[in-house]
Length: 401
Ligand SMILES: Cc1cc2nc3c(=O)[nH]c(=O)nc-3n(C[C@H](O)[C@H](O)[C@H](O)COP(=O)(O)OP(=O)(O)OC[C@H]3O[C@@H](n4cnc5c(N)ncnc54)[C@H](O)[C@@H]3O)c2cc1C
Picture 1 (cartoon, rainbow, N blue to C red):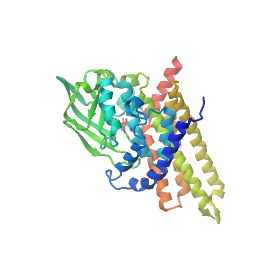
Picture 2: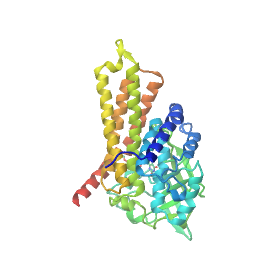
Picture 3: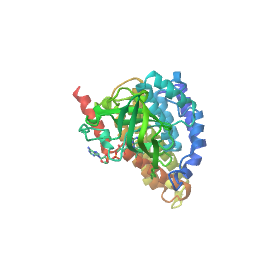
Picture 4: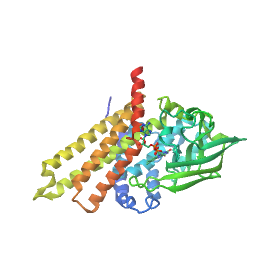
């Protein structure tokens, strides 16, 4: 395994670092503290980042994207997250679904949706699976009882499908222009056999966005409700086959591009937050004083900083290994393990950073508090019991072979 970077990978990394320092950092704290969920978003930063290629990093070159490898994507994600974790995620959410378009869509759909996506700096993507009564059910066994899992219904009417139901917590919903939507096309079949994936543009008749969720962390990242009231979607927007959503492969323990990428994505994003925390802890410990000498001279502070670096470097090694494995098509459970590790590491490292900053006051303390709130999002996304059970199931499956 060779972790040395090519000139191209290094150049993307440096460009993302510069963008995070010069463009993201100066606005991140204020956006984070905007009192309502609508004031935390900023199109300007999305457009600026998009012009540098950060929105289309994962789109194949033949469709006008940057066509970068996974190592580059991990590097860029981590660097952007050093500026703001949620802004990094807003960009990488598009890479996740670009991977899905590249893998699951037919050539006509790629032409129809990827080209406009690439051309428009304000074009964001999302995927709606979760519903008010169905979250974990959609993602892990035992979900194959016909009544378990998502309920949003799609019924065929001539050349169209009519969608009725609701999704919630959907990332980029309030700002996205195109969504993958999982809908039940056979309500009597278990989830894996009765679900179909549709491409639903924002201006679809009968489709609208409901409320925007006001979160304590990742404030920039938009999560919203989706309401479908006789929404009319053409049959040409079915992704893959009817009753054959990509959930089937996920349930079988095989991984789709979007799914694999999701694990790497969260781990790489957490790495950027940890780098940010390590940097600011060291800066504060060297400048603040206690008992007439720098905070850093206190052994307890040194031990805390040592622990922060130890965990961060361990996470970096696993993130880069997973990215390398994806690029070389090596199959392992490491992506899931990295995702779970990232939850433990980000929460430990940001909390230690906050402890070091407790007496700091001002922007330094606001920033340390923000990192802790952002880190808690991993409990919902990457470190919950469901994710850990999924990884355990994968380990068991691999051990059986
Ligand atoms: C920031 C953010 C972004 C999101 N983005 C999207 C998105 O873009 N698209 C989308 O579709 N969804 C999205 N979600 C929703 C997310 O996928 C769901 O919140 C998640 O699937 C959990 O579902 P739930 O909230 O209904 O919790 P529940 O399913 O009700 O689970 C509640 C708790 O019970 C635990 N639990 C459940 N089953 C088991 C079990 N068998 N054994 C042990 N423990 C169990 C879970 O781990 C969890 O701790 C997002 C959520 C967040 C927070």
